[in-house]
Amino acid sequence: MPASVLMLLSSFLFALMGVCVKLASASYGTGEIVLYRGLVGALFLFGLMRWRGTPFATPVPSMHFWRSLSGVAALMLWFYAIGKLPLATAITLNYMSSVWMALFLIGGAVLLGASKVDGRLVATVLTGFAGVALVLQPTIEREQFWGGLAGLLSGMLSAMAYLQVTALGRAGEPEDRVVFYFSLGSLTAGLLLTLATSRTGGPTLHGHTWQGAGLLLATGLLATSAQIVMTRAYAIGRPLTNASLNYLGIAHSFLFGVFIFDDPVTSTALLGMGLIVIAGIAATLLRTKAAPGTAATPLNNTEA
Image (cartoon, rainbow, N blue to C red):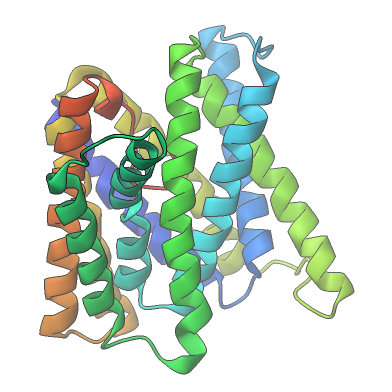
């Protein structure tokens, strides 16, 4: 199957996962959804690694710890944002990860004493945050403030997780092992968050209905399947083309939000989404030129 088709499928599956998360958030806390997403993913990857013969032992456990820490934190914030915001808004804010990466590059250049910062990167960052302002301005309400902040932070932490995934790839760690330990981290963190919030009167572990259990199972399967499909696409396709097609996830989530959740449609929000897509693709292109090969790892979602 061509890489372009795989990327289309992956972006659709991630958007569909967002629908399941939003529906599940009506019955479960964020910690619970993360817990079950991790459980399903870990079981799925366990079977896949046994089938492939991939060893579970890793020579770089500390790298997996830091990758899981940033990735799981991003995942929790993203799932929280999905539950609190219009679906397309939450998905779009997470896709800011490429723009955050450009900001990191600017910050790194300044700290290293560079005499000149690439003006194109600066323009990319400004364009991305202008898009954020447009996306949030017509939809964000006072009670949605924390959801908007969580969405922004999820994109930033996704960029940090990307750095760890890149480092693990360079260390020779197979993708299925990386995702397996990420899933274990999700399971553990989700359980700890749920237990912690239950002690303060927050959500605890809920009993299941058939619908609720189905949504949790679907979340885990869709997320894991989308990750595998995306990994295959990046292995055989062109990184920049893949990164560009990945942004179709915003379009999918927008349509799902409108037809399933009756999310509002405004020209301002659509313009903001367009600016974020342009900024993200430009950031990916500039990053690829600055360091060839660095765009070969998925970046634009917290499942990377």
